[in-house]
Image (cartoon, rainbow, N blue to C red):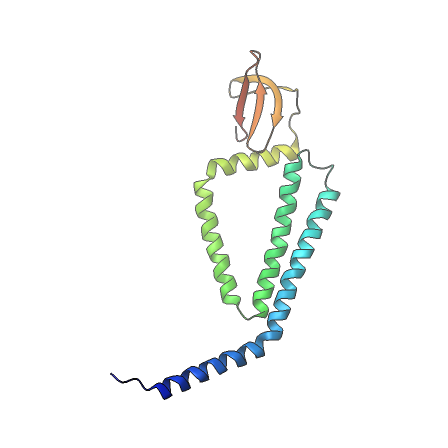
Length: 170
């Protein structure tokens, strides 16, 4: 089997030239896409800091405040990534990424259902503040004083001095 080296090198040369021409043609779009992405990072960070500063007194838990601010920042950055991919004419890639993230989110939602329920209940309890540290509460045949409320559970101290962990979904 003989290889036609001249023809092979000519095809390779034409392919490389086409790649270089495409890169030069798309360079301005790449610069704009990078600027959009970096701008979304900066705006997301500033928005997160602003949100935390404005709503510091509204949320009882610093953790809930930071999580909400971070979710806001991630949303802004993801919007920037989507816009940057649009500038590069990669909308199909962006849509595929969103579809993949949706499927992954559903799978993780089923896998971590109990943890997610406790987390969401903890966030709601942190915002609504149904009870405070030191309050006497009874839930699911457990009676005690609230020692601490975190995102996953509520810690009670019963009358025997024992610490009881109650999942927030209860």
